[in-house]
Length: 265
Image 1 (cartoon, rainbow, N blue to C red):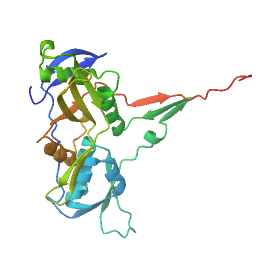
Image 2 (image 1 turned 30 degrees about the vertical axis):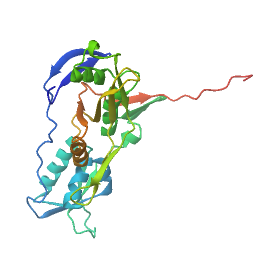
Image 3 (image 1 turned 30 degrees about the horizontal axis):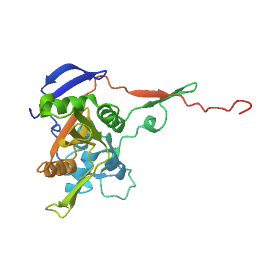
Image 4 (image 1 turned 180 degrees about the vertical axis):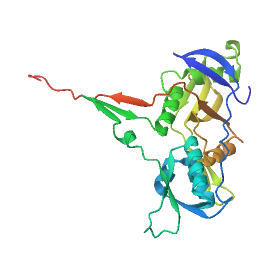
């Protein structure tokens, strides 16, 4: 099996054979601290919105320093491409904080409130978290995770003659792993998006087990996730899966209607 395989599915069927997948590496970032003079304080909302930023703050603290405002803004833009949207806001003249600006979550009210309303139809924008959940749902949702089954069949490369029963693949989405403290005294933990079990028949022995992290589009793998994945990979099969979906929707619409009781019920 190659280190990186790419498959394309439509209606549960493979329509394009494997290709070399795109790299998971993050885009090169202008690192804070390379130049000084422009200080920005990271606000809690920005940490909630952007997992990559959480890793950076854990290493460098809640105040990041750049040479200019434009450098800080470019840095925020690049982090926004990797994960949740961020923006730089200059502090007010009477602000007592000893910084030049704040790093905030990009406010997009139409994620929480409708971007438009047409009669009884509400239309919402789609945020980064929903994109991620969409990729996970495509791969793991019952009744049959076609793409994961296809991968397992080719990874194991077993024939029916080698099995007492038919190859059966199940996907579990409620799993957790943790390890003893790392070099910094912190415990390493990870919630994999799913665990794949390949069996010789439904009640047969386990042929292989995989722990998986799923990312959609250009979302990044967090450093804490990668540390746990590498640790687990010393004993188990661990997969990084990137889901590429053409023409992701920008919005979704819904109507909500309550069922009313009719006379006599």
